[in-house]
Amino acid sequence: MTTDKEQYKVHAEPFYQPQGDEVELYEAAYAARLPVMVKGPTGCGKSRFVEHMAWKLGKPLITVACNEDMTASDLVGRYLLDANGTRWLDGPLTTAARIGAICYLDEVVEARQDTTVVIHPLTDHRRTLPLDKKGELIEAHADFQLVISYNPGYQSLMKDLKQSTKQRFAAFEFDYPLPEVETSIVAKETGIDTELAAKLVTIGGAARNLKGHGLDEGISTRLLTYAAALIKGGVEAKAACRMALVRPITDDVDIRDTLDHAIDATF
Ligand code: ADP
Image (cartoon, rainbow, N blue to C red; front, side):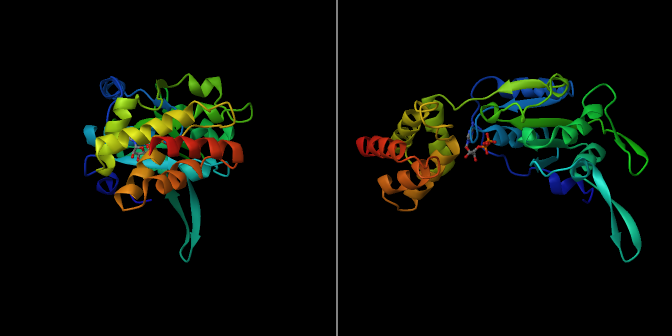
């Protein structure tokens, strides 16, 4: 990774509709350089919030989508072999610590616990990152901050953060926005009118009531914006809803029919 700070800057304001006082609280956490955890269901605005905050604070943002095959070297860096021999390549976490970026580890529970522990020395008073293989100890730049997100709904015994990791973060608990707020998000994000946005939000609400009754997860705000974008592009409303709101979230015929009926009743 190169260490050109500019390329990680968020140049245009990402639209973010606050749900409460999270913007102010994040600013306070950043001022104290506290590591931050953002919890909540998928597609409810966690990543958008972090992008917005990086823009607002004028700090570079380096995002890493975590997965179970990720190793500590994928975060920290590794030696590469090339024609001239070996050369060290910083990983995203190391780059962020060097340049003073906000490092956002998205869906951190996906990573194995032996990978997650590399963040520990960066999250306490040490604010250091040992590059063991390189024999270097990095002191994090004063602007560096670590942010992680995860979806507690997917939590299982095998996939949970250790208490020793959790207790290094200040946390935000996100949920789907309240109907009026979500309506305004869907309308502003896609340019559809408020009345139509409100109908999509109603269908979203109906699906969220089925969570735990055949659905693992409700319809996300992200999917509502997909339906809105399809309708805006000329797709008939019911077809757009079936395609963007129902088919992605369930393979169960009964649940599918229930949601399709909710769509028919709304439009
Ligand atoms: P996740 O919680 O999975 O990180 P995202 O932040 O990617 O979800 O949000 C998914 C989409 O939902 C965004 O691209 C945006 O269109 C919309 N969205 C959700 N919440 C908000 C919000 N509060 N303000 C603006 N857009 C939002």
